[in-house]
Amino acid sequence: MKNAAIVLAGGQGKRMKSERPKVLCNVLGEPMLEWVLTACESSEIEDICVIKGWHGEMLDEYISARRSQANIVTVLQEDQLGTGHAVMQAKDYLEQFTDSSVLILNGDAPFIDAATIKDALEFHTEHDCSVTVVTARLENPSGYGRIIRTDTGISGIIEHKDCAPYQLAINEVNSGCYWFKTCDLLEVLGEITNNNAQGEYYLTDCIELLISKGKTADAYMSRNPSVALGANDRRSLLALNDVARSEIICKHLDNGIEFCCTDGVSIGNTVTIGQGTVIHSGVILRGNTTIGENCVIGNNCILENTTVGNNVNLNNVQAYDSTIDDDVKIGPFVQLRPNSHIKRGVKIGDFVEIKNSTIGEYTAVAHLTYIGDSDVGANVNFGCGVVTVNYNGDKKFRTTIGDNAFIGCNTNLVAPVRIGKGAYTGAGSTITKDIPDNALAVERGKEHIKEGYALSKLHNRIEKYEQIKKENEEQESEGGKK
Image (cartoon, rainbow, N blue to C red; front, top):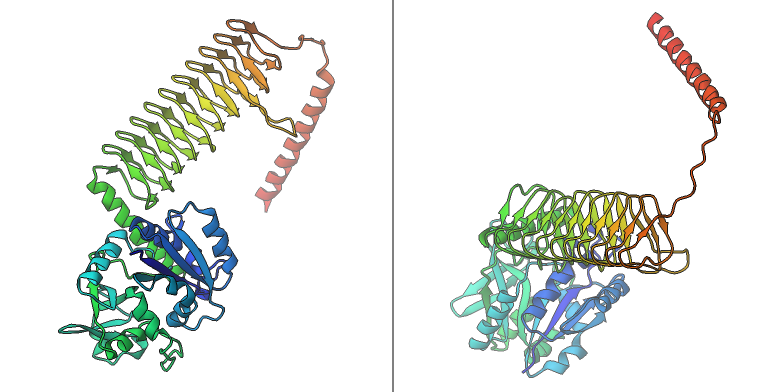
């Protein structure tokens, strides 16, 4: 039996004041929709239908670009007439799963998790429910639909605006996540009406309709207290970010990660960190970033989709789609652009940029250097100001540097070029031809000295300086008189 999921993502989110659909607004650098889709995939749901609305093409583009473990399709909801109306648009999709159950959840409630989805399904199956509502207890339930429990399950969900005063005191709320027997859902979906304060078709009305037909409805309370939290405006989106940031940091603390200061620290939901690693302030870790054990991630580092080995020390480093092996020290003020591989024991100093390059073991790149589209061997030494000139205005070319080479200060390596093993370049050289192993290449123009050349230019500069100095002194004198 193959279960499916429907993600409600058609809301315009006007209060977000964004040109993007609300579900593409970010929590810790990832769209809220991504959190929901990841939770579905992690709970082994293989078929997902996303209900899109305003600017639905953006959702299509996002979904087609992500690496998905599931089969994801989209269905358009042209008019936003409520959650029930949204699910109606997926009627044809639901008819493919009449022998199983369907999970329905909100794309703007990012904290749904795989454990809750699986546990709720187990509860749903064991109790032979037509519908199981995933619930949570909130200290402040304002704005959420209240769960009306009975001795045998639940009798329904009352939306906040439709609650009687005594019902507003209930703090068990609807998370917006449900497991339905698909055939039972299809039986009542067309019977719901918009006879309510909002004039919308509520999916929650399906519960009372199923109960009226003698079906079983119950609620599973999640152990995740944040499962019901969602965002309708920028303030609530910021609150979600704060909740997620705090919960993820606490998770890493429990796993043996040390935080010197959490100011400005933001760690994505899919980031993994090894024991004994220390995180300093201002660190941002995003995407599929993995950090090994006993590392020091210094102030203001940004790592995105980057793998870091053990015993690595980073200080003010930005790294994207790169790999850093064990025992590497980098920084401060270093950028690793995509497809960079820094091998074991490498040392990289300040103001260095590396792009689409491999830096061999125990190589030293001291400072003020650009290495792009290059393959660098082991134990190479780069002097200050080295540049691999990889672009001729039309195409990019690679530079190859052999083991144990020594690249002198302010050397320009004009690709395509190969520096042999153990070869040296003299400081200030522009290298355009391959250098054999163990050779020295020096390329400098002949120095010419013209006596007295600078005197006339120097005289003009001195006159200009004296004039500016005089004008400034006069202005200061006039200001004093006033």
